[in-house]
Structure formats: C-alpha cells, structure tokens
Image (cartoon, rainbow, N blue to C red; front, side, top):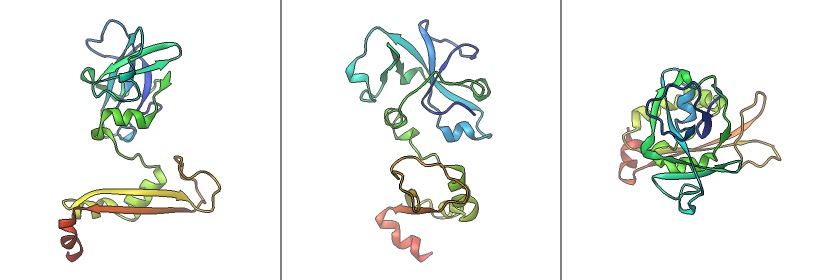
Length: 190
C-alpha cells in the first residue's frame, strides 16, 4: 500500500458519490495500520475543496470541524462532516501528491483516530513473541492504555524521531501499562 494517513490524493478514478463541485483532491484519514490490514476493506477520505484564502483559526488543527492547509500556492479546506468511506482497492495504487503533517492531522481528527503505528519488527516482537495481545485481552478491562518507547541501542541518531526496525540491530523497548488505580490490586492478584 503506497497511500498512508494524511496523504492527499487526486480524485481521478475514485468511485465517490456526491463530491463537492470544486473538490480536486481527497485527504486519506484512515489510519496507516488499517490501510495495511487485509481484513479492512474500506478507506476513509475527506474531499479537499479549494478556498480563496486561509482562515488562521482553521490551520494546524485548531478548529474541530474544518482544517485549512496549503499545497504549493493554493489553500484547501476539509470538513469533518464530509468524511466518506470508499473501497480500499480504489486507492491502493495511487501515489500521494502531498502529505499533511501526521501529528497535526491526528490531533485534528481527535483521539478517536490517534494510535501508534508499529514497525513490523516491533509488531512481531510484541504480538507474536511476547503475546502482548493475549495479555491485553485477558486484563484489558482494567487497562487504560499501553505506551511504549522504542530506541535503537548504541546509536548517535536522534531517538526522538520515528525509527524503522532494521535486522541485526539492538533496540530498547520500554512498555508502560497504565491502569485505573482502583483496579491495580485486581490485576496483580490474578
């Protein structure tokens, strides 16, 4: 899958009903993990409409219902209410013409769409080898969240940036399980 969350794609060839007249692109809002999964068959998009100028209240995700962004010298708007679902196969071969900054987009979409996309190597470690999904399934009722920090060991690179897991490299993986304080005793007693 070439397309990821935050990508702006052309509307040519997409089977979308009722697009606004002045829509020239679509913003992909489906999370990148869901785009990669074969069990998910749809992709959520929002039509991008050209606007004459930007509204500063609607840039950088400040407005909850509308987002303004710039591509080259042109300003565009997306409105949350215009979200549509289309067949994922119709976007799988498209290449983005532009990408929005992911953190800003996720903030705009709200926490409903915010979750971590794991590199394949980390996913394999956590779910296939450590069986994290089984642990969370068993105790998930009391679990508020799982946060992680993945850092490459003995690396001079800036560890604050996203990393790709490479073969034959060592990584430090810190998992933080966050529980409701009233449920901690229940978890450790079972």
